[in-house]
Image 1 (cartoon, rainbow, N blue to C red):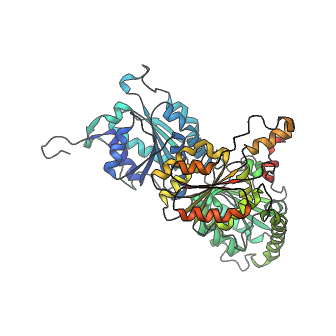
Image 2: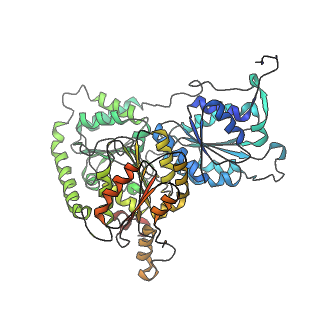
Image 3: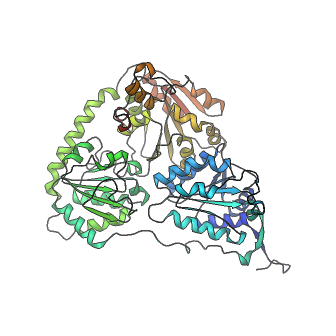
Length: 562
């Protein structure tokens, strides 16, 4: 291909990268600038890809993860070499455990200076290999777009996850004839990853459900990853199966749905005769599978064959897309004279009674007028404040453990938390990604004061890019989840070693950076403050002082302290 003067048309590595990102549907990159990577910015400007620049590379990586969760498209973060890339490691690791498809691009010294000790030179590819599905260096400019497409293919192999590419500075800056570069065409360089599962296994699961007297299903994060909400709802309603949700699966069923249960999960797992686990591993959140009755028939559905049967034997394992598998099971039961739905009415009523009893027991705490504020009162007020359009994010330890019991998203895809890596500091970058990707949504984020401190300076980025949200800090001036464990191990006398924070008025921090802020010490003031934050139209922090001597049940039951 030649220009008007007959000269070969040239294109740089950075522009090839931008073209490959565009082909994948990427419309924004999250980044912190560096001399190694600026040609990617130039390419993004030409391709119409937005550039959101942050104050720390960890934020860029978390935002790319968050963007993928919200949109279903891969997120992309671009960072410079050396410390720029190492700063992003935590965000990549979090995306791996959370099964989130994202691409991190890191700079590298010039190939011509390989092994010479160039600025910020580190073995990035080797460092990233254990926490990514694909980690590679781009060896030549004409391969830049091609290898970006390879990285995206691997992001979607099995369960989704992150990929990493380093691009040497001279590879990125050099220009090559356009005709010599392989540029992937949108929609033409990777296959569909939606597997419907083994047909024989589908039939067997259909039989198990039809004949079960006391079945239940846990709808995990892959239900949202696979956009399987409709299939999951059809399954539980058609077959009258009580459902629990965790991770990004929260919100699959609305809080008042008759099949939606939350507080009766332990009882169900001990008394069910059929337990179907969809898209969540037998990790610490599930007691490594030990919380399930040994008498129950256990079925596990997952995108990744390595997850099925890990830590606990299963009676049936199906590898496939949650939506396609659940739809196929529902269809396989459609011809039965009796699919068992009617006979399960008593089982649902039994679980509902357990659920109601647990809710009533906790209700006085949720309405408590105690001062300092009971954390249950705070999360109750937040739950009441949420609308069907509010996307909720939890970033913290003890305070977010409280919220996991009480806060119920009203719609699918409206819950975000770090995932099983338990990374603190995801809140601000998740807000950034969610509000950018879905500007029409209200974004509400609950932080622990320790968690906010990790990435809080990027509150300024939210102000700079006009990304308003309602932020709440549950402030106990402590890393309280750890504090509880230290007290249990070593006694009260050593309960404040290395976990106590200053009494910081975070509302002033918000106002200093151009946002909205309020301090709240009376529980009656929580809701009015939230309403004013909503009306402000700015990034906001409502700093709520909660009782540091009150711990969430989940904190007190942590296995690491036993």
